[in-house]
View (spheres, rainbow, N blue to C red):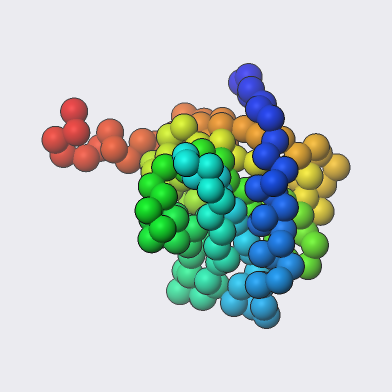
Length: 143
Ligand SMILES: [Zn+2]
């Protein structure tokens, strides 16, 4: 597999890190996400943890962006609280992000956790979910 990398949006990482530092509290909100909308603005969100399956920051962000009229996102990054750095999206989020924004770029690596030691880089959502299930392909009347 060849993974193409793209320039890293450091302003976006800093926006997510700022939210993680200042808005994450206790066990309910432990992750922050920031996305660059097509029109250039940055949208941020935090996760809403709950044992029933509360949404990750990336999913909250999709709704928050839509509430601001931002329906097209170009780049997304998630940053953990307690200085955990950049955290890659979980499997569920990879699928949702792919279905909503097939051209999305995701910033990964560089975190204190899973990406420890790796340089922060920007990859396509399709590279994070190879051989992916494409939800739209399975809807009646889509073909
Ligand atoms: Zn997730």
